[in-house]
Length: 366
Image (cartoon, rainbow, N blue to C red; front, side):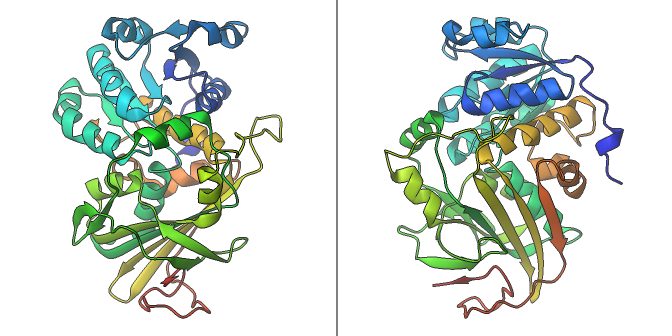
């Protein structure tokens, strides 16, 4: 049963948002307000507080290098959502503060090293504190995990998961650019059931996406979905691919930041995520379409926070999205306003030749 209507509204519960004045953080604050929560915007710069104070919100200032300031900032909150990258710098001190305050923690990191460190350093501490710590609950990471979990369904294991991401463009925020410069760790894939470094350079490939993208040149680009999927799904091989057009935008220093095209602040960017799960000769597929990867992250992470606060998540500790939520129900709760989502139990044949004939759709060819 879809639990969307069973989940109570925010009822004025306080949720802190670290990095609230950033691009994604502002979407998260707006989504919390829309659902009836009481956001507590937290920033590192008091000069950016006026926009929140004008709307009756108490803006708090904190610095990750000052634990006492974080403790004061989280006072009275039921959960904290970390939107401030690079998460290699912010996640560890903010998780530690959440543990001291006994409040749930979520972040939206795409940085593999940050998510791995959160699992490795805080798993036992979060269990003992009886809180949920949910790293990578954003477009990169959480969405791929939920789609892979939904596609896998009742299979106990899979031979292969391939995730194809297509964006029509990418106007990066300043935070994305700063994170890219900070995040220099080797990227990881899953090979033989274990995390392993990505080959350098990855071979050129193409992916047959559903419409409106069709055939796209792609490169292998694993992000935090590798980490969170590997925590709870038994899969021998996991690989993620991104089409090249948005990467050209990202690598071009003159590409402007996102521009709003509607009253919600969303940009015109469109995305499609295509997940293929294979077991033997059988394949299952999950497809999601939407607009603006930054704006979409807000309902994704706030839906997670709401379910955690409503005790609709399974377990405590450091958890992956697909591990603590019923994935199809979660994804359906975001439709149709934020997402279109479909599951296919059998993939249609592709018109393209391939070196991977076991994949009947969305397949790769070199």
